[in-house]
Image (tube, rainbow, N blue to C red; front, side, top):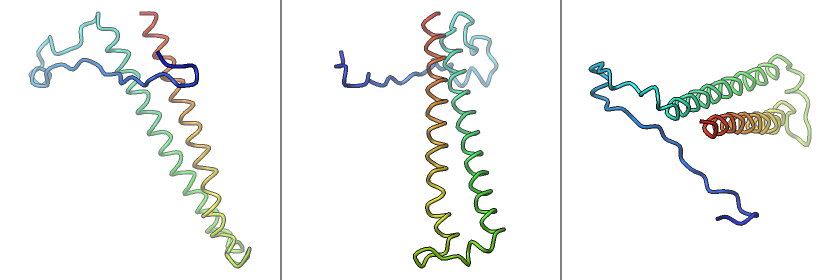
Length: 125
């Protein structure tokens, strides 16, 4: 048992795998049995986490590209200097970090919500 100050140990969740040869052959027993609802839940969790990761990655790349594009379209930022450094460089060097931290925090919150939904479904099984 863990003490109240320590977080619980992480547990790796895996689903039972069918024999890949049987999957290629299209054997009827290659499919997960309908009573294996836990395997269905795990696959659903994996898909939702993958979907979340892809959406977050694409969103971060798009937001970063828009940030860079906005700096490129406003040439006055390159002509303005702060402490001897062009303002556009400062915005790129420092301004990306709040974006990255915000995206990371949103991802962690959403991933935890997905896992909580999975746990609640698995507990009610």
